Structure formats: C-alpha cells, structure tokens
Length: 75
Length: 301
Image 1 (cartoon, rainbow over the protein chains, first blue to last red):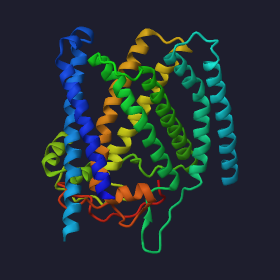
Image 2 (cartoon, rainbow over the protein chains, first blue to last red):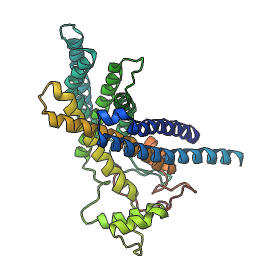
Image 3 (cartoon, each protein chain N blue to C red):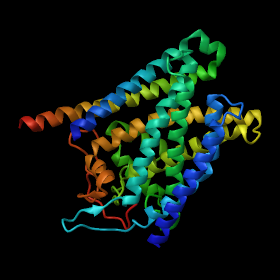
Image 4 (cartoon, rainbow over the protein chains, first blue to last red):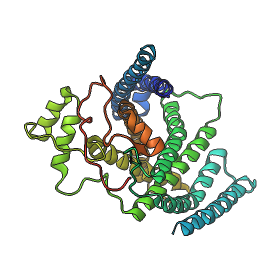
C-alpha cells in the first residue's frame, strides 16, 4: 500500500513540476508582460518557485518511501 | 436525533435532485440564448443552494458519529467516521476542481487551446467546486453540532504551541524560526496532545483560510451573471481566486509531504484509528520531534 501511495505521490509531484515549469517560463515571455504586467510576472515566478520547491520535497519523500519499502522487502 | 438527521439527508437528496434537474432542464430546453459555458455557470449557481442545504443535512449525520473511542488494543479513534467521510469528499472535489482550474489559468497564460473544448474543463471545475462546497457546508454543520474545537488553539496557548512547533521543525529551520518569533528554545519542550503542533498551528489555520478564500471568491465569480458585481470587486475576486488556487496547490504538496512521513496519519484518515497516541515520524525523514508521546485528547475530530 505504501509503495502504491508513494507512486501516486511521485506522479503528483512530477505533474506539479510540469506546472511549475509553465509558471516559470510564462513569467519571462513578452506576451505575459504585455498582457498581464509585471505583478503577474512576479506572481508566476514566485508561484513557480514555490510549487517546484514543494514538489521536490514531496518527490524526495516518495522516493524514500519506495526505497525503504524495497529495503524492508529484501530483509 | 440520528433518525431525524437521516430523514433530513433523504429529503435533502430528493430536493437537491429536483433542483438540479430543474436547472438542467431549463438550461437544456433550448429556450435560453446561453452558450455552453454560460449555461453550465447558471446550472452551477442555481444548484448551489440545494447542494449547500444537502451538505448541512449530511453534516448532521456526520455529527452523529462523533465521540471518543478506545479499542481493546489501546488504539484511539483520532477522527470520527464523519470527518473521514468529509475529508475524502473534499479530496475528490479538489481532484476535479484543481487541475481543471489550473488549466483554465495556464491555458490563458500560454495562449494554448487543447483539442478538448474549454467548456468541458469549466463543467468539471463546476462539478468539483460543487463537491468542495458540499463538503464545506457539511463540515460547518458538523462542527456546529458537535462543538468540537480540539484543533483550535485556545487563547493564551499560542506561545506554548509556537514553542512546540519549533521542536517539530527541521534543525536548519528551527533557529531562524525561533529568532523571527522571539522564541526561547532553552525552555522545556511542551507535551503534545493528540494533534501535532504543526497540525494545530499550520495545517488547520492555513486550510481554513484557503477554503474560505476559494469559496467566497468562487461564489462571487460564479454569481456575477445573477447579481450585478462591481468591476473592481470582480477583478479582486478573480485575482484572489487564482492566487488561492496556487496556494492550495502548494499547501497540498506540503500536506502530502507531511502526512506521508507520518504513515499513522494516513491510516487514521482512512480507518479513523491510530495505534500510537501521537503520530511518529518515519526514521530518517529528516525531521524530529513528533515522536514524543503525547497525552490523548478528549473527543475525536
């Protein structure tokens, strides 16, 4: 069960890393600057950094869960 | 009381069914000059009073499951069955509303159109939002009926909780946190109750604020075709709705990270039971502190 949950968590964190990528790239394109302005660009930048950071933390936790589940199986 | 609550749920289900069917019938009659998106918006906003009322009735049934219990093997019931039900309903709502809301926002930013029509994203978003609002109404009713405040920090208890939270943080964060809030770390570590300090200081307040914000701003946005909303208010609601959505995405990642590390919390939110009196942190998780045995609280939450 733990392994399944860890896999789901890993998928979720990877999807969020994808979202973070679009936030970060969206913050630097001219279209956003023209359409939304500097505040929206800063918001996208901050949101992207935070989403990426927390997604990495979750992914790290899920990898730990997977490796510890494997280790306990081999013991 | 339980029979009355179930009768109210049955009546609420029937009335909600009739209300939603009437709204769908009106939208699908062909007599209205609405497009798909606007049509769904009207169905959503018209169904909402019924959904909220049904949520309140279900909250009454949830409240009837409230009460402290201890199993013969010493396990304590951490959450009532009603809370567990409400939590998973809320999860379902977020699973539907969050990705669809995110796509509506990102699609606009990236200026990308998928082969799937946009109104279908809105439709799923409205269904998810209805489920979230149903769960929020049920929880408000549940908390009103049970009077349970075990996750709230009482007046005069904040300094103890902030100190307790310091000991639950990773060592690298503990120092800056204590310095920022002027917390004396030489004081003895306060005993933890049934809930961790992180759950009481960070989890409950942040989720409550985010749920309130996303609900209120979403209602303003969705209700703008029925009730005139000033332009500035609508702009503010739209901006806050998106900002809150992003904050929920971040908080959800943090919530999963926190609970995965403490596997007993995952068990408790599924079975309602927890064997340890306080959630233990998995070895090597990089955080210390929550493994200290705490005193069991009063009722479950």
